[in-house]
Length: 257
Image (tube, rainbow, N blue to C red; front, side, top):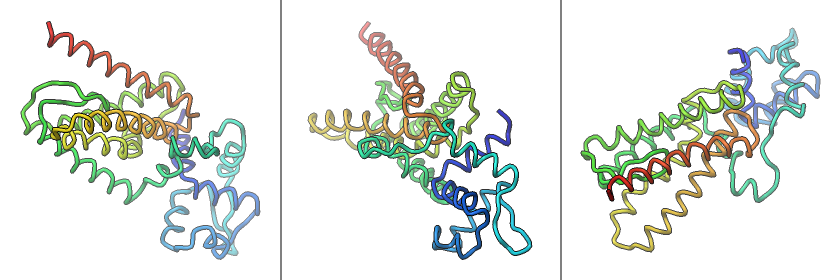
């Protein structure tokens, strides 16, 4: 897959840009007044138009039209090969792809900032490290806990990138995977606060909930970035998750021995 196609997948990752592209294609040409009805804020509209790049152009009358490249992308968009967000209510609830698609631009950097800040929570409980979203008992210096946690998240995105490329022949960016997965990782970063509690029931409930929610959010993130069906995304995340569980099992057995 070429660099050009990578840009196309990034463009199509946002429902508003898909809507703009389809509106222009179906109308033949669209004016600024037409498009401002889709995106009421001028700044946001220009942001999406800029990211659409060479998929659209303006003619002599300042009307927006699809370029030849844009027409090909539109054909792909309405084909069976493009995987849109899932429509059923239960799928939207369990795998909130629609909401994660809006994490880009300044919002993306905000989530990265929150992820970085919450990684410092692990200073409170440095008897545990993370492998993907699985806590593993391992005594480390509190000083090294935050960078180790952040490195874990980055490495997980790198592994997902490799698996997506190996299994589905699609190129994606590590940063994109990290950004879209940030909500899951932020939830997981609450572990140290909960682990400091003496309430074992609370710890158990949070552990189960965080694992389930974290997995669902990660599956959604992979699905959005790679434009894969949820079942295919599940394969990627489950491989990563069970690899982490196997390492946890080996670690526990090693400690007991």
